[in-house]
Length: 83
Image (tube, rainbow, N blue to C red; front, side, top):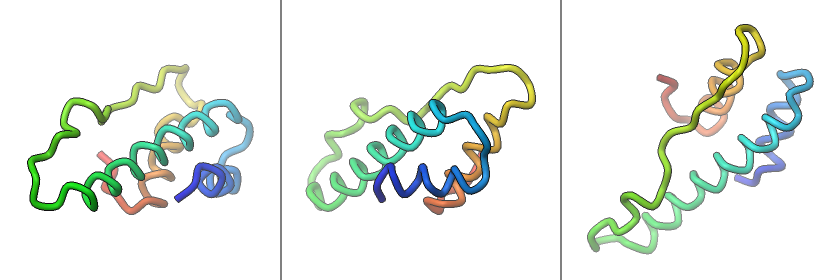
């Protein structure tokens, strides 16, 4: 997945928040694609990526700006559970 694809998907559902959508799309796609690449490369070897890939993000903002909604949409798009 490319960040442009994820950004276009988010643009269909979220108005404004352009900076947040662009940053999230870039970071999520980089993280997701890095994990997929490492799984292909390191089959059978010990996982050397632990500690190098950040698993958490922090969204800060006032109530009602769409933080949870953005992450929920991203989770649906890439097919991961939303917790």
